[in-house]
Image (cartoon, rainbow, N blue to C red; front, top):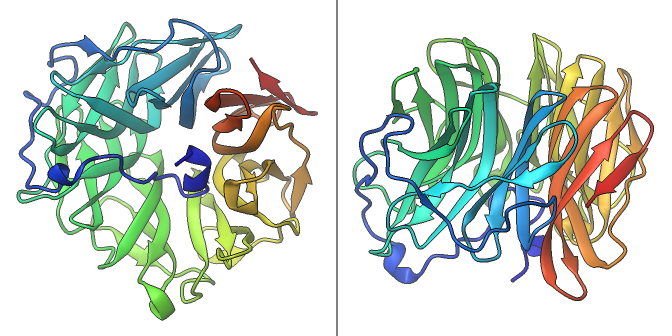
Length: 386
């Protein structure tokens, strides 16, 4: 199965064996940055913006300091860094004994403080949620504390408002759970207040006391979009205009000051259309999007009036699709798809300014299979970075 079939939802199908469906005991110790023994995953090239595999998310500290994370085709976590002139692969220290790993999300509080989250499979066949920390020199695996009796734990999104305030969302025992970092250790939040049958896709924290999540709630005829808000106390569900619309889903979210934008798709099967909603400080409203058979997977806003959203056509199995928000409505922005690809999609985006955005994802090469994809927006046009 190619990664294209996993789009636009950011969480891919698990690659673990049936033996992995067991009770998990956390296996990295202690749960502090840099504490674990480094064991760099094999098979990743040393440099280059493209590799065999895929990228899931990107985050920028400045215009000259960005990260992108994902997985190589050898099923080990991958990280790439932008230094202002070129992207290059940076070794990721896998947990000792890991036979595969994956990092779907990254967030940075500073040049010397970034977190990536995901999962790995240990030598015993158990799936374990974990985090990686960047200290300015190297990536190191860090333990997270999942609820006891956890089955197939996974962290799929992280957002850090400061060096001592991060939130991560994930799945355990088939339902959503949250993790919080207080500057010393990660702890699980057993009852985040988001209800049952929730599927959180992404978290965005504009400040240490203001965080949002986007995703879906319920199944079948009871399904619909979901957003949740945290202001220092408990998480609370916030109703959206599509909260009770089966087939509608939210994937990406980006918050700036008191406003947020969240994106996804409507009528996901069989022919999705872009969906975007805006939080104005008191309520969510649906914002007009370009009419297209496409899905949006991620969004990045640098101000209330400037956002970029990325995704793919045909549910992520067609061509790269992007839209730009300029304060009133979304407008489709042409973006290139690699000429040698059978399918391509961008699933992560980070904007430093209205003139500087990075989009990441992957494409399926007609010759070599899955390849990572990085594209850049210079304020006028998107271009593929090779």
